[in-house]
Image 1 (cartoon, rainbow, N blue to C red):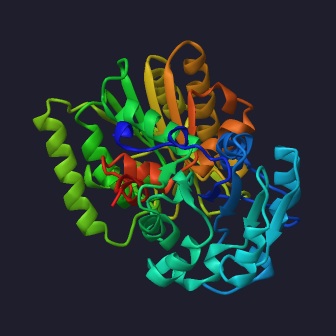
Image 2: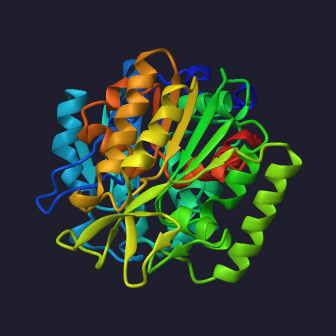
Image 3: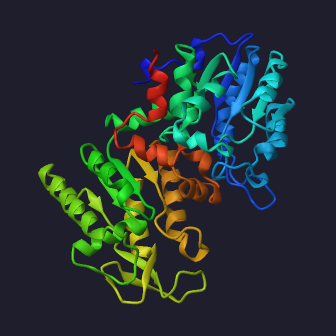
Length: 408
């Protein structure tokens, strides 16, 4: 698929005004200090290449959920010192993202200069695939570049509608190119075997299609976190007060189909679940805890992390793998007393990668645990998209990628 998409290597940017859709929706603390700059760091090569070719750059992004209203809380202005330092040049800022004032500022840009516009989501039209809003944004550049993999699964104006106004003058940036290449490498099923996928997080509903797709070529699918309890329940286990989604009956029917597919493909042992879990009598760090078999959790208690046997079981499989994909924590990672399982997985994947395995990791908590253990730089590729990664794993072309391929 990557062969059909134009990249920034296909354009000459000298004297061009380049409108780059980036994903600068980064986590910050109460002082607006960035706590994870992965998305920004990964977008810098695209920006630097265009600047080096004497292009003029206009950056557009969203930040948070301001619900279509301007708000100081969600302003992108806090990024200016950070970007200026990283790029070693002055990054200018405009307190709007459409209109005459914005157009005037852009017309004053010189080659090799860069302007960051205010939060796209200050306009409700950004989340509505609005043609008029897209037209106003299209006035701001000659070439459109999508380098925002993290939101390329969303049907938002700047992702799916805006590219239409650029005809053949649109492409993807280097971050997007890398994401597509590494995902294609994994989804081709041609990775070195054994291929292991570890899926965690709270919701099984968002990952059912992924599991169905991966059964075809994975050797092991390890399921942890809140996702594991619906499987254990339908197998007759007692899960106490552990997490279950509301549409449990519908989910149960689909999970039986997954078990049937595993049988059909002669892969009845492909799915692996935790053997034991750390259970707690309340959802807080100070809760009383004990270790329990995952299928015999007493009422009033809930599984909040995988236990010691499960850590060993999962890590043994990971360490024998040659291709690994991980998305989602295997416990309530944000509570330190229930983060050991996730951190142990992070270390095991890093260790296996150092021995020559290929690893692809996505999702905020998964990457945060790698950083916590100081081993994020040991992974083959960190994906900047959580939801976008999951949508890609369903073997679908993301809407933001489709919009750039279409050259009409």
